[in-house]
Image 1 (cartoon, rainbow, N blue to C red):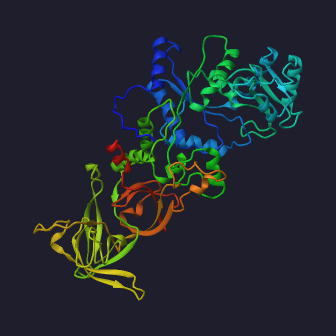
Image 2: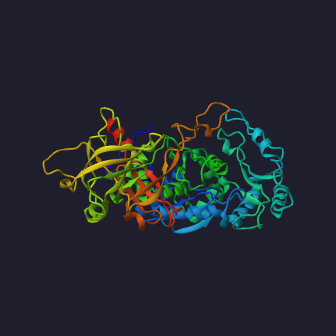
Image 3: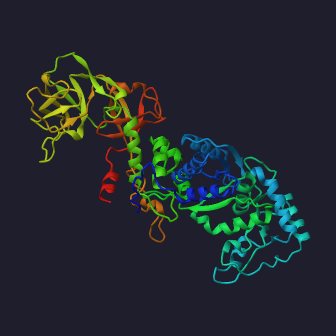
Length: 564
């Protein structure tokens, strides 16, 4: 587990920045820096993509360059316009704007022409075998591969077959186009990789124009080349693809320009899965309520939960760019979030498990409006008025009839402070026929207004509260981690990762909040004093405000970092 430490503003260059600065110094790209973020639109982006977004757009900004948003839309079976739209929304929300919006499908005709060129040069051939047969012939890195019986076809025959593939004459799976490279290479990706496969599926942009589609390795590097990309940043699993990336470019380039692919460790968080296939399973099988469920590690899920783009950008910068895989503690992400929310979130009082308190010596029909601080971290945030009267609500957990030794909150005969208000003392406990506590009778000391006693006496607890008459009803969705274990994909043979789902990852409660929240709008952030950070969910309506708990007030990372 990583115990990433916060870095100073003057941090050392990461290895990608060092590479770029060396290229600038050498004039490799005439001082140009041009990056790209190339997602496949087959699902919603997750927090791992956020790291790549921040890196690629951040590098372009730092070095006065450009960054493209390019959709790797080469598989019509899994790609949808819905995903394209969500990706654009996520990138904008994170605070970035692309220099060009491009698609691999923009280059289908050029890729096809280049493929014909390779066929004419004897560097590509049509194979009639199934992918399974091709896979077996590749054998293993320590054994020589077995050549396809179709590897020696003439260029004329291959051109004819490839054109007929494009014309739709053959069924899916019946033929592929392969590059002719080296069936004995220890790098399995160079053992005659597949360049095209037949898919009789409509494409979200090109419709039915194509029935052959390029594979990732064929489309990706050539798209970089066509766009003038200088630094193509990928995750580590593509490191073994780099020789193929370079081989394809070497066959096409007519000058010294080449995009430079380099690989970084992807972002891994504990208590999280980020496989698109597994996230899809959670959505499709109803374990969560859609891609933007606040328990999901998707960017849309984090956004709905109340995370801020500033917090995610800071987190991405602080964890750095590594060459080796590691696992980041989710507590560190939450720490970055609390830092940001603490500065920006107005403080309000809300009670999520209400217990009525009747202040018996408070004047009947009287009500006063007390001054409350909006945000002690921001003096310019000012103050607000909160109503106080004879009947209020406190948290049920803040009272115990028979408290243990270290319980300092309200109990029979005990005095506590009400935030911004008065000292109160519990005089009587009211119960129903079943013995459930329904209300408390308390008295208040009018001389303690504002929370201080003139005689200097002290109390050991300060409670938040809400006026019973003026409070507004709310629904609070208390989110917790989606998985019970830090490595949810580590399961016994025959088990599915869903066995590690947390059955208590969401609890919905009804509460009451101070009336200042009546005008709150979706995605507004607040700190519910003593309870945590919350934001307004889009499900809110005029009859009921719905709040998502973004994160609790407790900061586990601060303790971890202190011990490290």
